[in-house]
Length: 458
Image (cartoon, rainbow, N blue to C red; front, side, top):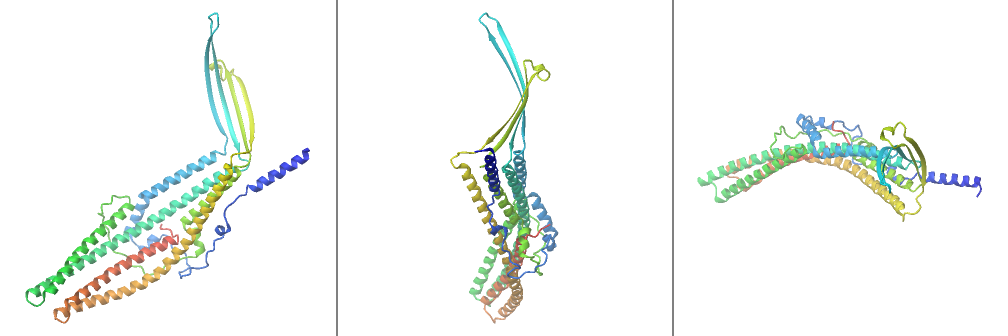
């Protein structure tokens, strides 16, 4: 093969290898997601709320969320993972740079000839050596790029967890308020049952009521006593859950002020296409996919020849004091070009593993993306449903309270049985408790919608 033909073949080989470097396993489904033009279940397309905590106008809420973000143990773990990712970038970057080492060696040898004379020799060496794995195929660059993308993904994850902690803390505070108000309803229910029992017992002693009414009144009183005990436990557990988010000891003792706020206005939901850039968890999934794709490119390029440069410069002397002044110097510079020839399919399998990780990351990204759309759609429709139910229950609460007053009046006049009074009491207090629960459900859904939209809490 003549020189010109050899050069042509080498050039074609290099072009082929360089063309093979552009490996990517990401499909068009991930790069061109099919986001709808608008939300299917309604929703205002205005700008998504920033600092959604302020919309509740609750200083206690903002203070507790700030405490949770500062102290929560899960967030501390994510901050350490971020620091770990930064060091990983440093390690990957250092692999592209030359390495230098300094060494100083010394030896002392003794010998004795047949005549009994002894000889002692000394030798000292000082050298600087260097090694550089030349990144001709940019395999190390891709490894560094993967580490940098993983760092960006971890930063997005930290932001996502931070928002989740803020949302969880707000939800738990409203849960404590709900438990407190339900406990108050249960206590009023017990007071009402005790008062009714006393009225029935007085009438029974006067011969105005029969024993059945007395037993029913006693049963109602004891049941409401049990209900109060249950609500007290639920309140303690709700407080303890909140304390855990705040990194406090969960003793269940915590001063909570205020009642559940009432929300009336709807919030803008933005455009579906903007959701992909607003939600940090989606950004994390996308960056993780890009990092996996960069690792695939690095695995592919690891199958190409490796070029290594090795150099050293040093001095040798028989006296340590003369090492740097009169020592004999010696230097070397070598290079090595290594092409993997046979490794029983290891490099090919490593590349196949990297491709599978890309495909897994892509499916996780797509699944999260469409789940995010579903989160928003469900929260929008749930908001309308909860509002309708809440307004209907407010009217039901008014009607049941009026019915209870009328039932008590008619019972004292002997127009209805005590069973009617018990049913009226149950309906009135059930309606009051349901209104409290629905108020909390609306707040929980509002928080879920803020989080689903990727809204910032500060």
